[in-house]
Every structure is written in C-alpha cells, then in structure tokens.
Image: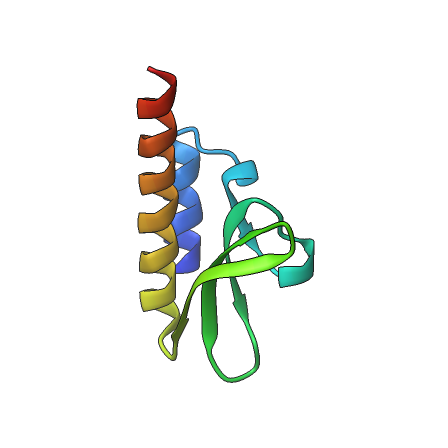
Length: 83
C-alpha cells in the first residue's frame, strides 16, 4: 500500500489524522506514526516522549502497511474498551 492509498483508505473509513502521524517524530504524541530518517522508514508509537513498538523498513509500502494495520487495530481496541 502506498502512503496515498493509506490516507485515502483512512478518509473513506472516516479515520481522522488525530489517529496517525506522518512526519517529525518530535511532534507526535499518543499516536502511531511513520517517518523517514534518510535511510529507512520508521513506524512507531510515541507517548510521553517515549518511542515504543519501533520497526524499521527499507520499503515504503511495507511501512505504510504496518502503520495502516496499527491504526486499525488501535481503533478496534479503543472501540472494545468503550463498548
């Protein structure tokens, strides 16, 4: 999945950008995100300034697949906790 395809899928599902972050890690908080460090794509969860569940990918599409999966899973867990 490309980044564009991922974003379009989120839009179609009504998932706002408050549930994912694309860009500088320092600006992400309590969110799954993805950034490029000049050599590889980093997918992570960041909370209280701490990175968790960090995975590196050389393939951009694989990184997008990972971020997409994380966002969907986190929303499913959130929905279960509410209901």
